[in-house]
Image (cartoon, rainbow, N blue to C red; front, side, top):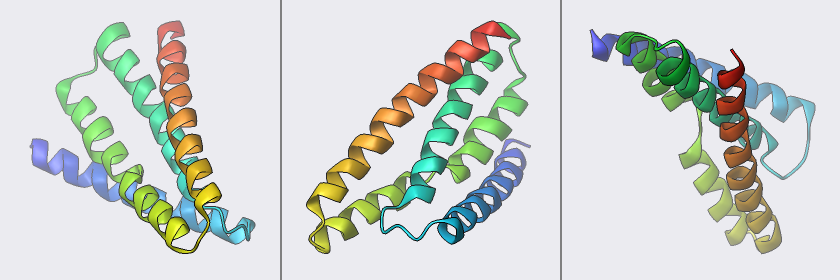
Length: 123
């Protein structure tokens, strides 16, 4: 059952990532990977929220946590894409943009997890 939950969550997370990445890409023409940044930050926020609500506040069942955290958010967040985009920026001679990409994803991701945990404490 755990594998099924991870699979269904992963399916939905991957589709969500693809849709959001595409929408952001269509809405902006920036060379900076804004879609990946948005996905990583929102995924970090959601993971912080699910963690806080699921383990500290209401204690979600292991099945719900597996579906949400491992399945959906595991497929939704895009760390490997972020890493590749950073390397491509470096290869293209955009070292400053690469550093900004790393700082923004890591910095905003940490802030988003903290915000998710704080919101989870309020629920």
